[in-house]
Image (cartoon, rainbow, N blue to C red; front, side, top):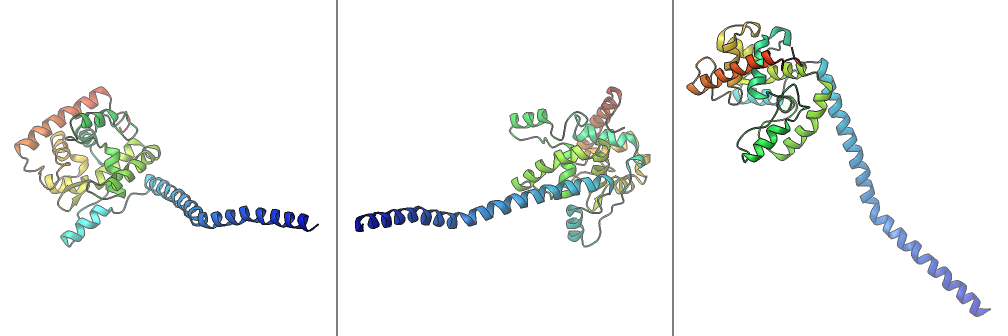
Length: 252
């Protein structure tokens, strides 16, 4: 009887050991599980927030961007900018910016894979950002090159492409792009450089405005350098080709 009781006691002791070990493991893993659960929740919340903000700007015009705010703060005064709808912009301006910045605008889903491959082959000496990417960057993010910004841009761009019509993307882009120091949007640019409204821009004026977009502080549309003149001539020809080929169907 004594031997049987001892055996029974040993079994109970042996059974409790795995339970204690499991309890220790559960205690150690509890913070990890908590972090994983909250990380998933945060990610879902971020995705919903992005979708909500992008959906909002399909019908609501962006009031201001971080770049406008920071530039106004640097200058010590509000930037020059007035929103205009796409219907108030000369169609040649829309075609010119597409010819200058993103000739395949109507055929890609936010990323121009051919341009990206060409940029990689040339060692990154040329840009490959589409108008969609630039619009997302200008509206939601900040300027400068960094991996976090690029990652966010890559995440938001497909959402914008899915929720915004191509014409809306162009409309927003032309209203938030920087054209000169403290000058944002095509309305302010047309008035600053040529003294006309955006609906009255000629093909040459539109091409010059598109030509200065990559370097708005270093180039002038009203007093163009020889480079800007050559580039504007190329853009003007490109805009005419886009009209002739029907590559403006997605935004006209």
